[in-house]
Image (cartoon, rainbow, N blue to C red):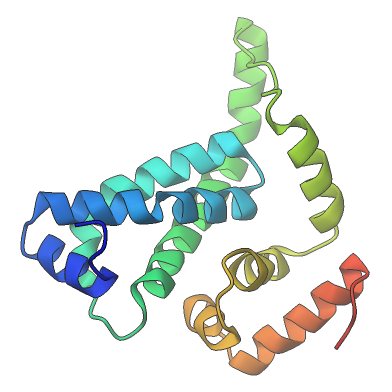
Length: 175
């Protein structure tokens, strides 16, 4: 099962083959979690997004029509789930934080995140969400500019311009 191409696994999973669905999840879980972490900036949020994506894929897989590579479509699903997570977090975050502190239930920072989080935050702190999403898809997921453009609903030229601006912000070559 593990050596079958994504297209075969997707077709089998869409037909109800649980082993094929499991193989897809195993193959792509690291990509799902990694992209979610890049987009949310938090492993805890990435855990939540990855779990949500894995659960919703059961129903969403039927909407995959094969017009793009499966990984491109999957990155779109993860990007949308990450955006939803950040929206929910902004909306309810302040209230939940205040209530947790009042109740003495505030969670301690996750020590695993300390080094990675400091580096990531310093590298992308000045970027707008649109720039972070573009960087995560092109640099983090190694998608083409065309694939990233399709996921983000923008032109390929806009992706190219954003990547140029990102390189300037991060101090890389402006090619």
